[in-house]
Image: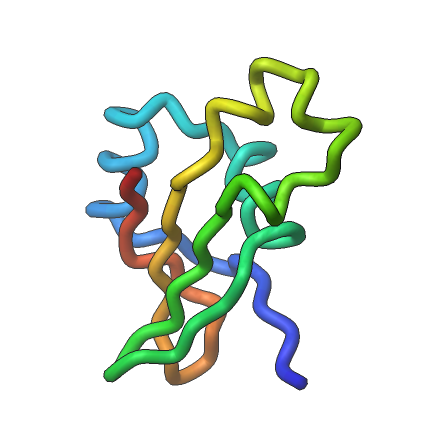
Length: 85
């Protein structure tokens, strides 16, 4: 199985992360705990409530990440193209 990490972030993704108040730590959390879907020319990483460990559900900063979706370039899986909730 491929391991996806962010090695670069597009300017569009940087803008969207700022608009959605998502930090680098938030992005890492979604990558570690989220589910990956391959569709078209992208890899989607979605963090649902069931993906968040029970002990983390007590932490407001983590709980607000529920529903966050990160979109990666499918070619190498290391370029973050956008993020949304």
